[in-house]
Image (cartoon, rainbow over all chains, first blue to last red; front, side):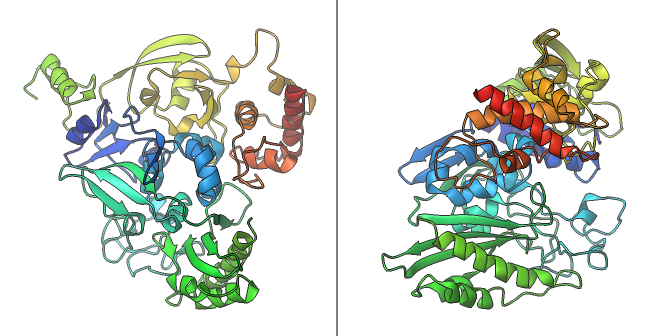
Length: 327
Length: 206
């Protein structure tokens, strides 16, 4: 591990002041950062430990629920208001990682975990445009069963492995950020970005900016759930995951649907075509199939992962069936 | 850096950053970084340490404090062999910088028994022969100890039938397997591990 200087921030302004320079990184739960530092993928010269900042609260506010950036994943998943009002978020969090890691990982850190693939994680592969811009992509001509089927570029085919962010996408969450140039409120759908020609950037966060909270608007729609499909039953990344929110009227007709996929792209992936098809239809099997049929019109699967397109569609049907059946 | 240590520390304190580092200049050589003062309570005993910031909690326990019960498996948070309790919660010690736990209380496998009396989870593991080579066992036991606390507090898991119902947790075998999924056992002693956790759970609630 590259030697680094370490400092403990005691307030937000101090943390921002300490992060003005290049090669500074904030340390929160550390579960992704320290892992990548051990292999030399991340090489910060300084770490600013932000775990003592007062950003850990989960608070009910007139505008919804505010999740402090330093709230641990476990505490968010277990919070009574999250469980009862935003069950898709609780389910998505406990679908990810392990109990130990969820006890360490934070809201902000979960959002900022690297979009990654095994070739990115292993520096003995010289080619990785995400790790070393311009070096090529070992995954393109390697084994890419787990990789992206949509939104990828010549430069990068990695997927974002997060579960929490997929749920946040169907909840229309807003990420609160402070930085040297002022505060910003970033809709979750604009927080992560596609690889394009800049695969080394996972988000639009600027140097020195700090995530302080994630705001959830009041839940207008009561039915929501999360489905994760993976190679083993637990403690594995998604091949495909689905976050679903459904609003039905008293006749069982769909008023609104919000659907997002995980494991298919460089960022959590909303499927608006499928959402549109559902509006006004009775909540029933043929509606789910119609939605699945139009989902992912721009899918461009690779040699090893064409199965994911059909898997994503079938997962949408299953997730919608489960969500509609909720009381 | 033409700045005395005191002036530097004071300026950092004024900016809201407490540090014992003499310099913030990026290291240009592979010299070890300056040590950082860290206080930890480990198995009830307080330690005041000066630590290289790169030292993980796992390496501190094993290499510097001779608490070798906590095992290093993958060193990347994927196997759970290094599971310890920090302020009562289970974490992977391999992915924790020791300096980031200043002021925390750590319990390792060495801190579970009361003298010669085994912790009930340790006793259940023995009773059910819940191990083969034993390398993952300290992590499994620490994990199970925390699992029982979490379940008693009503924590959800991916096996919870309906997270929206704030109901007490029923530790079915499916729940135990899911909640122990952060601890791998290459010998495949899982059936007896589940049995041991089930026994410890029943004894606790009876």
